[in-house]
Length: 329
Image (cartoon, rainbow, N blue to C red; front, side, top):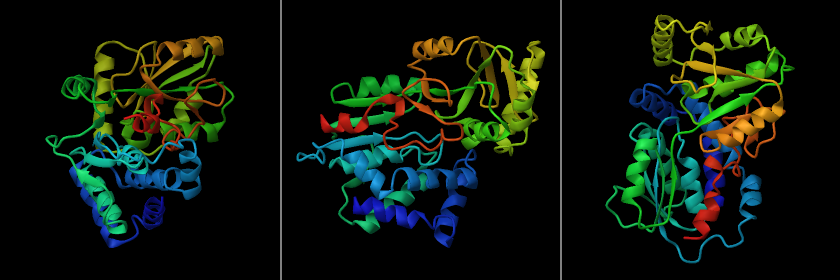
């Protein structure tokens, strides 16, 4: 507990000293989708939501069997689509009393190496090691694409495992949202260039909803980065060639439909008559949805507008309790 509280204190100054400024620059150089603003947002979310000592105590109080008396070696294979996306799994393994064998994504290696170095400075004996894939492990938590997950399921079929694949997030609007609320929604959509599983890429709106204010508010957001803009230009050309109708936000596209978008620069808008219809649809899409952004809908992973990128300790990815998994291995 003290180790992570101290880490939180150290991260308070992240981005305001020479070392962390270098780390940010290197991380952006290694992964061209990362931006300094995205990295600072990710660090801020971790520090405020996952490293606050009172929140940590309240969270762990629900698991009296932890920390484990019989420490196991747990491999953590991380994704790298957004900055420090694998930190939560690292935290879960260590606070549960197990040994963490960490395999960062090549896309997020700089930031994870920085966090590991900080933890080792704070507690030299921390059971945190890097994993090459050849060391013996007792359990594994692995996050990747759906294709990668097929390999994971085959390779780690003999040990307890928690696998995560591709998911997306949805927002459900009531039609009463003001400009401030829609600006908050823009954070849910465009943060991390739309690459995270908690990024909203599909919107549900009332049948008679006028999209003009939504388009105007979203259009005032900053362009995520050049790669996002290139993606938008390519997608716009394809939709135009296919004769598909869309609203152009200048760096993103709003398209009405009942499918999922195929591009980070595209937002699909679906219309509903009753909220109950949307709730039923959400349950039917449970295996695909990460979180639901709304102030009206009923859903176990519902968050308020503007808060999708600030998951709490109990907001488990895919709705699977990681600490419960770790307490049973």
